[in-house]
Length: 212
Image 1 (spheres, rainbow, N blue to C red):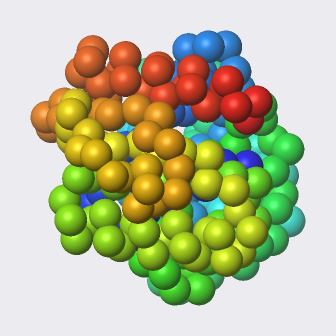
Image 2: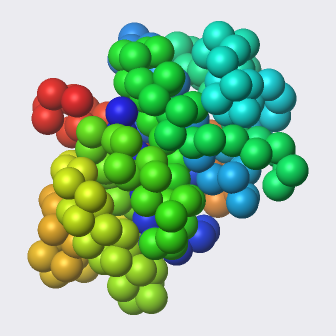
């Protein structure tokens, strides 16, 4: 299980989760992309799939297949949305643990910040991919996420920089992991941009060389 994490909302975690899922799917891998951000559940919107059934059904013992939704434009990918309201509670450890062996690759779109909700998927994941822009505030928050991952014993496999093609120096030292890809700004329909798709293909190849 690979956690897609970053310290600040809006840094590109959800886009990277789906972009990487699509890239792995193009490599004929089966991919499950799960939204663990119960406060801002938007992976299903980006993927253009229904928001129900979702992780709540998985946590309540339903078959994982009940809660999976195939995005119309991605091959080999299934999306498991987060609960769609605060009243629709979910026990994340139970839900995510049941997803662990559901595909060749399980990607988890993590909440931002350093609170308990952000720690839960990091604790359960085998590895974490850090996602950040080059904005100094975003980098500082992502450094906190990196520190939390190390404290939980989760291996930082690398960093995906978003909205840039020219990464500044010092990021690998700051975050404690190699920069695996720089994702250009693809505009509004970011995942339809060919340069963005190529960048996520490169990210997928870099991750696979690490035997994930």
